[in-house]
Amino acid sequence: MALALTLVTLVTASTVSGIGPTPAAGAAPSHLGDLTGQSLSRPIVGMASSPSGSGYWLVASDGGIFAYGDARFFGSTGATPPAQPVTGIATTPTGLGYWIATRAGVVYANGDATALGSMASAPARPIVDLAPTPDGSGFWLVGDGGTVVASPLAGPTGQPGSPGSPGTPTGAGPAVGPCPVFPADNPWNADVSKLAVHPSSSTWVGSISSRTSLYHDFFQDTQYGIPYVVVGPTQALVPVTFDGYPSESDPGPYPIPATAPVEGGGDRHVIVVDTGRCRLYELFDASRIGAGPGWRASNGAVFDLRSNAMRPDGWTSADAAGLPIFAGLTRYDEVAAGAIRHALRFTVRCTQRGYIHPATHQAGSSNTSCPPMGARFRLKASFDISRYTGQARIILEALKTYGMIVADNGSDWFISGTSDPRWNDTDLNQLRTVPGSAFEVADTGPIRR
Image (cartoon, rainbow, N blue to C red; front, side):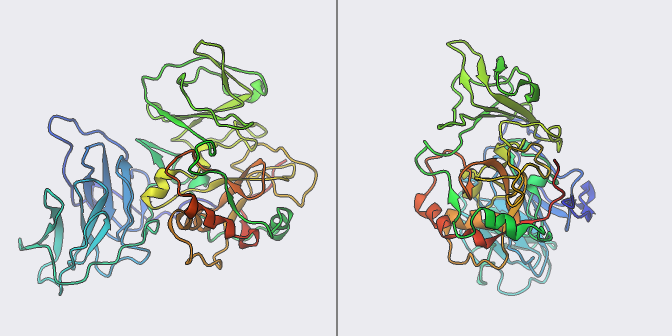
């Protein structure tokens, strides 16, 4: 299937020209990820550390931002690159924002960075870097001839992309701590907005009832949504017994804490993200075995978060489609950071016998009017989302770019998200006004049976 990233200019050491502050004194810096082996439209020109020293941002000359570790994405210079190349980035003391400066002295303020203007006219010598004051109340710009200019500046502040509207490139993909949530070229992380419409699109959309609307299966009330837990390399491995699909389950032990949250309702999923091993462990219909450390489940799967390897064809996982659940969850931390950079997981009542990769398992009927597992739905480019705000707007932007994947049989048009009390139900309820007819199916490959 044609989901590969376009190969353009590769980042090399010779193209990196700036570096921000280092971690706190006495703390050895950790490698938290980089762009080795990936491709970019423009070279990396700057780097800045988060206040903790446990994260960093890279900025490309077109304003694209790449966040690693505990550094969060707060937007970029927008969908249109600036007229002059970006030359530097500086962070606020909180780590909840940054300034981006261009060669012409235009400064973009993102996150909690204060808008302090730009140079009123092009400088005689190009700006090559900027540095923040310790309290974050301002910054200095420096030209290549050594001229220093202090904020505030007389010219207008550059208009950054709204949260969730990164420039080109969009970043290094979703991550949890030092681990990617699958490589940047994984199907979950692929932009499908330009793919051809599937020949069965109208039939499959109609089978779900195009007159019904989108629905979020997560709320401020943490009884709803799918919980997960993040563990480190010291988490003890415990035995897991499978009694539903043992032959299609990855054997234990798994690093599951005794206090791991279990999803409410009938599915009782347990999801563990191990950032020490960069592995994802998922169980279906899970429960503790007595007072001991062991667990039982119907079936389970382990995924290497640094690999594109799928389940064997015909195998299930903790999800009916054989997919990882965590990769498709609407996560609060991503929405709060301003962008979801992956496809979402959703359910429909009727699926046909068959699946489209990356799904590997079917759980449907002989009714070919219904979509197969793995079908990739996306919000039509023509659907106007300008009236939507807050969390709903960010989710809809992701559905236009990355779409959503049929992952299980369930209520129609239900997208999945994490259990988190920080969700805003008023924002999320806007999603219920998006009709099923606003969606179409992207052609991502053949149906396998």
